[in-house]
Amino acid sequence: MRRTLAASSNQLLTMPKAVTRQFWLVGSARCAYRMQQRGVPTISTHLKAQAPRTAVFFLLLAVLAGAGCVSQKKAREEAHQAYVAGQEQAMQAAMRARQEKGPVVMVQGQVLHSAVPWQEGMKLSQAIVTAEYTGFMNPRLIRVMRSGQVEGEFKGIDLLHHQDMDLEDGDTVLILP
Image (tube, rainbow, N blue to C red; front, side, top):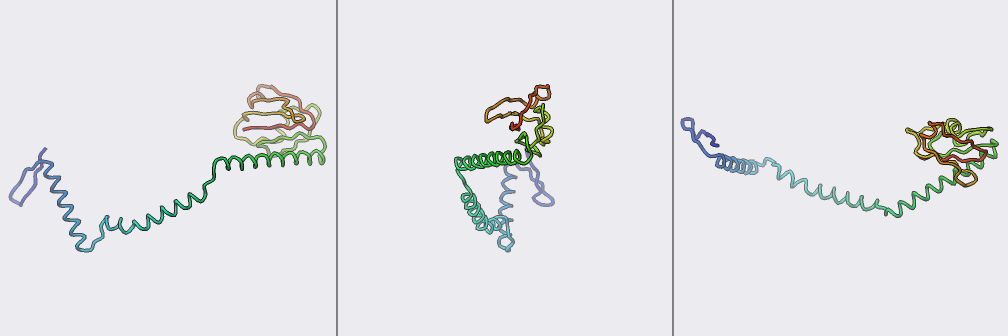
């Protein structure tokens, strides 16, 4: 492909595209040189002025990132300790509720009321409704514990299909999302 350039007002020149591109690059270099001579800041001078600030920023970022690192093993241990502490608090709450309210069923999980008063013939679904389950979706697993042993395990959908069980005083219902 050829381009047409006006060398003067009376004369037209036809040049190959590569030659045209070369003239444009030379013209750009001349323009940048003239701007530098006049003291007009260019992109390269702007980048040179920003370089020290950028280096300090990345150095500070590296220091802050390194200061907050925790090993995965230590993070898992802390999470496990927090889980165990939460379980102990729930058991203590169950003991207090039994002493204060009489016969109760403890419901652990995403519920508003963890201690539900037990009644003769109470079903698992009644306990969950009374505890006011607040989870977004059906629970993944519902486990009924009696005297420290697993008495029954249900999926959330099982309760909708009328697979229910009777609860006794002191039972603990674990709702796992």
